[in-house]
Image (cartoon, rainbow, N blue to C red; front, top):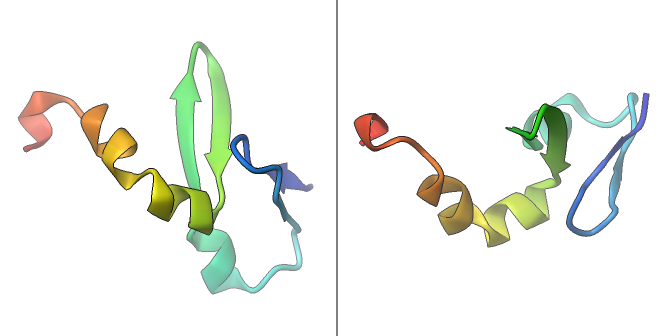
Length: 57
């Protein structure tokens, strides 16, 4: 199964190096799952952290 980054369109293939595959970030949004590749996740870390519930901090 190929996973696609919702921001840049990069593809994660099933045979990709496991450490790189684990670096992808998933988020649930309106009942679906969206994926961010390593590069996009790093670029948008503040956006991701901003959606965490206050009790997390």
